[in-house]
Amino acid sequence: MTARAWRYSTASFLELCLPGPMVAALLRGDEQDIHGLHVAAPGPPPSSTPTSRLRGQREWDRVTTPWSRTEWTINRDAKTLQPGHDLLVGDGPSFLNFDQAVSAFLHQRPHDSNAGRSDLWRIVLAQRAGWLSQISIGPDLLTAVVDGEALDGAILELSWAAGNERQCVDSVGTYRFTLPHGLAHDSLLTLRREDQWLDWRHFPAPTYGRARDASVVWEQPGPELELFLANGEGKHLECKQEVPEGDSRKKMLKTIAAFASQDGGTVLIGVRDDLQVVGLPEKSTKQELQVAGMIRDSVEPAPPYELRVIDHDGKKILAIEVSGGGQMYAYRNRDSQRPEFYVRVGRTRCQHATLRSPPDSGRLRPPPRPESRHTVDGTRRPIRHVRPAPPPRLARQPVITTADGTAH
Image (cartoon, rainbow, N blue to C red; front, side, top):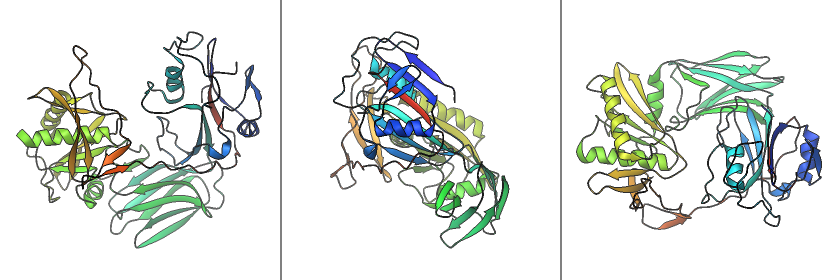
């Protein structure tokens, strides 16, 4: 971690490594002297601080680490006076206002006034006792490379619906599981000590076009495609026999826009609706260029996606892996020149809204995110918000990122 400090006349932003006892004192509400600043937690009390325990290689707010970690976020106290909306100019980058600076410092992204986020602190506790640094999956063998700083008593377990297999992990190294019938659908690989997990990987149908796990290597893509197809078409998967034309092309592009607007998805070209693999009729390079041109011309803004060719029993499949973009993406109707927003529900698409761009703006203005979603039967279902569990006791050296506009 590289320490950072942005200082302005009305606010200071710090990212640095602090001892566990000092962070614990801050969470109790005790003021601490840090880099010449008198720093106190802005509230709420620690018992209501949002907490996330994340496995290795899991991205959260654009941060990915090879080892597992626990993160806490502390929101601003509504009763505390916050810096105004004046321009911030100082030792750090210049920003239009305080909220813009907070989003850039904590999350490396522009501020979204509709998101309703009010984070001021982000605390990261790295847990390096043990982690899975690489997993290779072949037709009949799973190989896991285990790394860590305290692996005494650790166990590596591969479990699936019909059974499980365990190996004792006595040191950093490579461990293997034979797969007589290939990797079972919904398998779980867990590095654990007694009843506590250190790291894990889950192998359902692959990750639907979301950011791919860099630690997982498929030595032969056949097993991966079989997992893709295990659950059939649905909210995160659509199959096309060939690169579509006409109305079928429009439907595919609307699906890509819906995937990007939600949490991602994959379109497989070269697979029939009955999941029969037929492969591409022509060279895959030509198909890739054709699909990339369609997406460029018809989906706005440009969605996050990756084109990948999967070889299955000598047949080539083109996978369009679309990541969730954290905003609404529109299909541009070439007949009406109007942006159309879609969300995916099961194997259908529901039109979310159709809007016109403001005159001469050149930019789309998607509708505000709803507090409820349409279900298949036409009713509306409210989005539920779950109260997070209290944070566990701090133990190791954490990394603390703060943005405190009152103490300087």
